[in-house]
Amino acid sequence: MDRAQLVITLSRLTPPEFDTLVALINPPAGVIPGNSAPQRSRAVALLQWAESTTGSGLQDIIQALGQLPTAEPVSPY
Image (tube, rainbow, N blue to C red; front, top):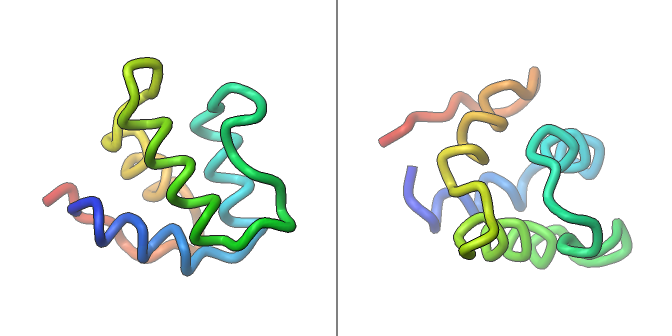
């Protein structure tokens, strides 16, 4: 899954699904905007953090997406 597909997939998650994903990945407090922010903004913030030198990497997001019970199947390619 490439970055563009990740943005689209994350943007389509429901707020509770996205919050679960964030809890699984556990970025530092303040990295992800609150629930009142647009979902796409929250998704982009998560990806920017994941790709940063302090982030966990996109692969962790892909793996966490696979753990969500209602998420679309995620291909690592």
